[in-house]
Length: 294
Ligand SMILES: Cc1ncc(COP(=O)(O)O)c(C=O)c1O
Image 1 (cartoon, rainbow, N blue to C red):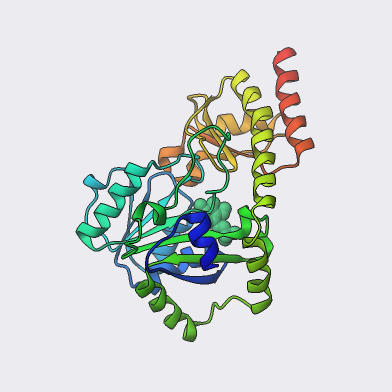
Image 2: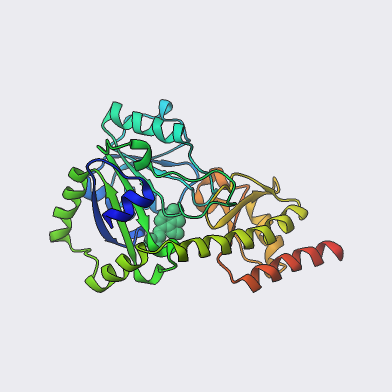
């Protein structure tokens, strides 16, 4: 796993690695493990960042991507590529978050579970915060999952990589709290992390599905925003998210309303590319047919 972290994430210097049960479970418990009192998380975000802060009875604040405006906190969640928006944080943005951590002492937890899936092969490539840290991993934890990378969601196989002091603290708590990843799953993880070919094949599948579904959504009047990486299309028709959801539901296409990820998402929808190739093709066809018959 160390080898994978240095080869694929670009981790350098002193770092540790700890397998975790899922990454959702880790995200939900990290503020508790770190005894965080003030947690920052993205304005439009995976809901477990907030839930984890609530479990820890911490103050949770949704923030946009500008660390110069952030109040002091003890834990900050970064998610690049983002679920649901597909936004990739640039090297400079990740550096500005590291600078914030150095300045304030906040721990940065960088959830990178979609890092393997750029929206198109020539586009912007997602970076791990550990690559940007260039060997000084103090205060930094990268959160990874095999659920997306290797389609192993049922295995609940995740891992954290980063600051050895923080990871050791979590390891010590877990010795007594439980949450240890079973050895057979760790063995499967080692095999999966040793192979990048299946990851590239999976990435190519999402790229192909995106190329079919995105133009159909655009024909229907959706404007695609961000969507630089990940498994989703984040788009809007400048109407309430539920109106868009209902229009697509009438065609038998199920999408997620943006407000599930925070109020700032309430005029967007998230369209997943996790259905089969045949279902994605069928969805695009239904959209085109509906426009022809309108
Ligand atoms: C941003 C993000 N982080 C973490 C997870 C959790 O994935 P898992 O618990 O399967 O590792 C998800 C799942 O959708 C996610 O979107």
